Image 1 (spheres, rainbow over the protein chains, first blue to last red):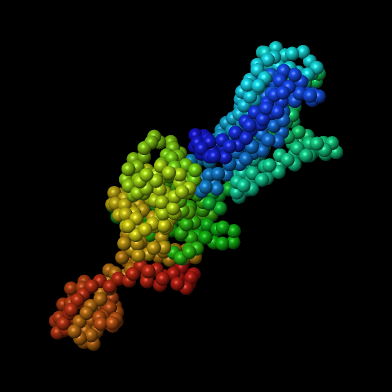
Image 2: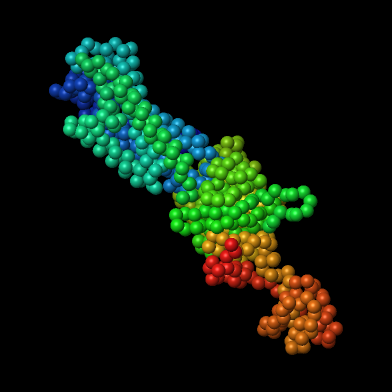
Length: 265
Length: 315
């Protein structure tokens, strides 16, 4: 079933288009900061300010820019497609008749979600590295206001950040997937998922509603940037727990919907 | 339609036993029971909303019955049951991944069975589909008829022992319908059981050996098609003297009814052969021009059984 899910989604025009859109952002970012190659980008601080220093710097700056909205929106769209396409096309009934059991179907779809989450992160990282290498070259990772990181240390932190981002993407993918199973049409699930991402981001910016924001996985999506902070120590434990909890709840809901719902209803 | 009462018991290929299903406030199927044996082509008939598709959904596990059981090849059927690997199904119309080619769709649905490509009856199924080079084009460009033929190929390519087809002739032209009819008959002759739901009664009459008639979710009647049409015991006789022939025929023990129909007579005689009737007429000096079995068309029989709604339904 995993092969079926991957085949049907990858051969769909909108999947490579969505990934190409994500890959275009680092390229455009490199183009816009190319005049500052090897120097700080104006007066900006943090990862953005350091983006022209090296390929890795550009890559992490792009992830910082995209990980809260663009990447979640794209992966929500892809996850909804995984959850609802076979039903929208009508082939779900023919898969059940093939026969495919509910558990096999679910495992295939969850596997496809994982692949899409990894592919989304890799797509941005690869585009960032290629564009960064082309415009800025491979130089030591630079954190403004801190000593230059060794290559090993930088690669370790980048990999940890990528893993964390992938986990965050997987949490919104799982939520979108559950919505795709719950709602009658895939388009409705895409709309609901994107609305959730936007609303959660807005909520996250309201200090008065902090007590609600901390319950949402979106609240922890930027935690990985502390891996590259000059002073604050990184602690991702709470964020990892929040994402895992969101994935577990969404998966449980998906299982419940799939088991309870009559496919012919 | 029922299993034999003597000799080795034969497990029905398809069995619906007291099936009931309700969607919200609507009773879609009510205590429906019938069987389909090997070698039979059974037509599932009924007006729109009679419960035919709901019945097929339960028979393939897509819908769980509220009461009763559905079994295929002797085993109870549930969603994704392993017995379904020996069943070819067309239900709720054709469905494919639109951006993939016809052949890629066949491979996709076949790969879900976890068996290696190609399927045992692929060539014959593709011949029936008759898509030619279009099989390598994207399905979203197919006409309704092409999609239907591809779906039928999908159902037939697995060499199924049981076929359940919901309105398989929709969108097919007359030549394609004929080819399908021949293929289904060949399947049945090969020992498969075929259950076909259709509104094309003339086609069904040429294909089916048995029929199940439903109305308002309930069984109206089930049995061999010849019984349903009344052809086994009715004759149309043309004679040179109708009045005298009527008198002679009514005097024969075993003749149930004799009615004048146009130029001839319609005679119902369940326990008599046509030669008995001819012999009696000739002996009485009535000239017999022709004798034929007088069966109703399936359309006439169907309308008689289903008109008037639930009052005809058997409970």
